[in-house]
Each structure stands twice: as C-alpha cells, then as structure tokens.
Image 1 (cartoon, rainbow, N blue to C red):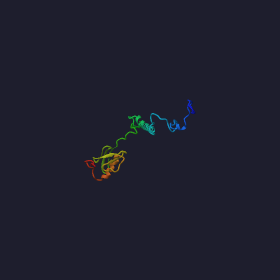
Image 2: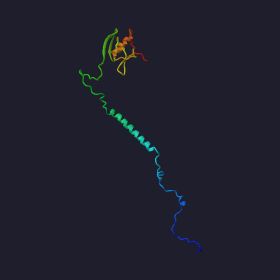
Image 3: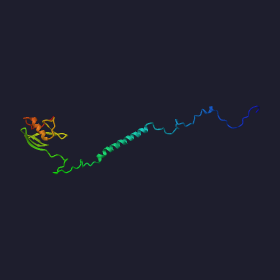
Image 4: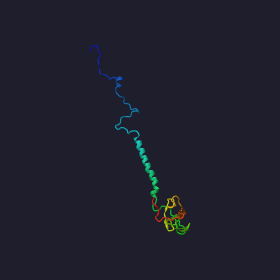
Length: 170
C-alpha cells in the first residue's frame, strides 16, 4: 500500500465515554433496592395484623382474669360458714317468721309475713327488694315489717272494711 497506513492488529483501545453512556448504570445505591421476584407486602399490613393479634390476646386474657374467681368458686357454698349462736340458730340465717295477733285501732290484726288479715279479711302485701313491705291499701309508702304495714293499713282504712274480692287489676 502505497503511502497509506497499514492496519495492524494490536491492542484494542478503550471506548470513549460517550459510548458508555448508552449502557444503564449497574450501581446498588441504598435508595434503589435490587429487583426481587416477590413484591414486598403493602406498608402497614404486618403492623395491622400484629395489632389485631395483640388486641385479641389482651381481650382473651382480660376475660380469663375476670372470670377466674367466678369459675373457681364453689357453687354449693355461697357465704362463709356462720358461727353457732346460743339457741342453735345461725346469725346470718333467715330471720324467724314474724307472727302477730293483736288489737290495733279497734281492729283485729293477725298473721305472718305471708298472710296478713285485718278483721279476718286478707290484706295483700308485697315484699320489696330492700326487704320492706307495701300493701294494696297504701302502695306509695313502704314499711319495715308486715305488722307495721298492717297497722298503717288500719290507719288508712279508718272505719271501712277491706274488700273480700281482693285487689283490683290495674
């Protein structure tokens, strides 16, 4: 080849920087995680599941703690055993049935807590939750005993008699 340069095989020169710009960078910077085959769970889902589980365990534990004394209680024993009292009656037992038979205000009052009669006619009583009594003659005022209720009924009746038909239906 005349006057020309001859090409000889030799070392390959490095490419210029412009040709490298076409290849994407292969860097692993912290803000760009490497691609993974499964996407991560949505943010907050694992926290939500954890909080649900913690709430359920807390609710179960609280219920168990509240019910333990009830479930361990002996159903046959509702109160502590009472100490014996002279006369053979327990101090915390039911009080003895109130029996009375007296004249009050010119009327004969006779009966027990369950059956009160004024001049032989029945006086209907109701026992309240607090242990007091009310009668059909005066059911706006309560009295501590059946006898006190019968005396108040005599006072309220004056000279009239109780009806034999019993209380009227409301």
